[in-house]
Amino acid sequence: MSGTSPTATSSATAGPASSRSSSPHPIARRGAPAALVVGSLLAAAGMALHLPAMAEDVGLTIAIAEAPTRWLASHLLLGFGFAIVAVGAAGLLHALRRDRGATLTAMGAIAMTLGAITMAVGDIAHGAVGFALTEVDPATSFEIHGAYFEHPAILAVNTGPMLVSVGMFLVGGGLLRSRALPRWLGIVVLLTPIGVNLGFNLGLPPFAPGIPFAVGTIALAIALTRMLQATAPASRPA
Image (tube, rainbow, N blue to C red; front, side, top):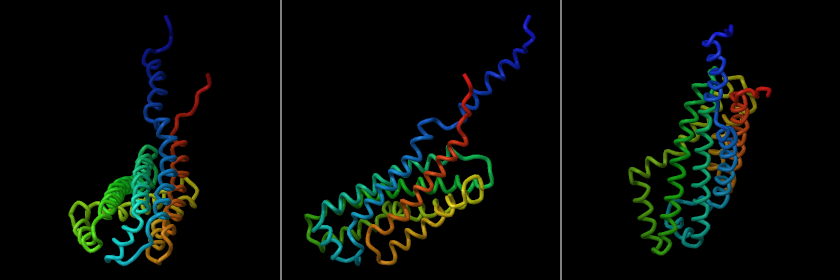
């Protein structure tokens, strides 16, 4: 009769299986960081292609009518880019560990995911509306744009940029607080919303906000890669 306890045998068998089941799926480990990189680059390209900022008057609708393809392409890039970023941001929830920064990071990941989703919907919708109105005279088009932005659903969708900014700020703070990663990663992510807002508010060229956004999101992808590697199960010898 064997001296090995059935309970000990079952526990030994269950141990690795439990570790494997609680660890991130291989697709999540590779796909989430890649989604952050690809999505941020697409969104940055959309910002660069976007029409220059101008007063919210009939001049805007005239500019859209003069470059409808550019208008639509920029908003599609923004929309699909932010949709992909949302997938990557959600991947942060698979990489959380019980440390000092976990709560902040989780809150930031949720805010960033929701914000990126709403931005994707808003950008694609606005691009389609503007493109469709190029056949309408500029004054009427401007009135329709005004009614569009006053719709409650669109007002809700337009909270997306704020949610993404708050989310990145919280994630950056969580990365700094955890002390499990190089501090520069947390600092870059933390400062990203400031750089983006400065790019929009200082009258810089359209591509300006996309640079800090891409840099900060790629830094977040690096942090996520290291977090997922840390939670991956250790390889066992054959």
